[in-house]
Length: 173
Image 1 (cartoon, one colour):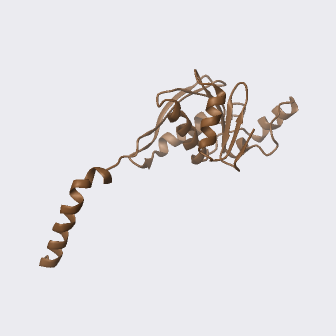
Image 2 (cartoon, helix red, strand yellow; image 1 turned 60 degrees about the vertical axis):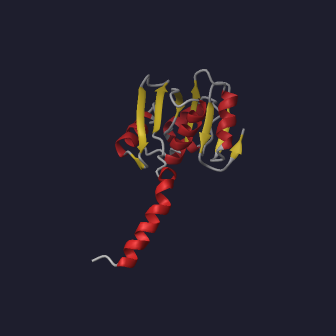
Image 3 (cartoon, one colour; image 1 turned 180 degrees about the vertical axis):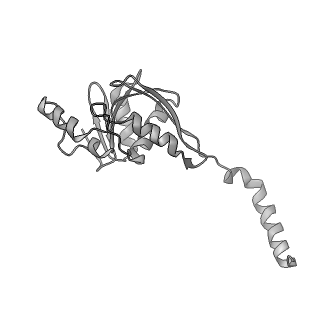
């Protein structure tokens, strides 16, 4: 049986908090990525976070989509870099399609790029699934890099063809 004291406390609490219920009912918006991979020609639209919960199936789809296109090797991408990509995209427009140049990069492919004279690091964050190179059609890469820097989540590099983001140490180039 409920005591009179407990009942009165509950009644007062409800009376105080009820007018402010909209403040406590704030919904986290869905996290959605619409992407195109230039190397595979694949497109993916995935709601990977909804109602405060990550969707493991959507995360697996994203990991596969961001695989090394050279070896088809798939590893789990760091969720922080996926969230950073989504954050940058949301600033420029929630419905924008992201063009992926590189997600995960296998060590075999990284060595190949180095042997071809490409300026890739021996210890690239791509090797750990912690970096993504991308662009968004109609948005200047300089602007994308500036937006990415505002999140202070890791490295941001601006290149003529794309923007690099990673979730390593904060640094810019």
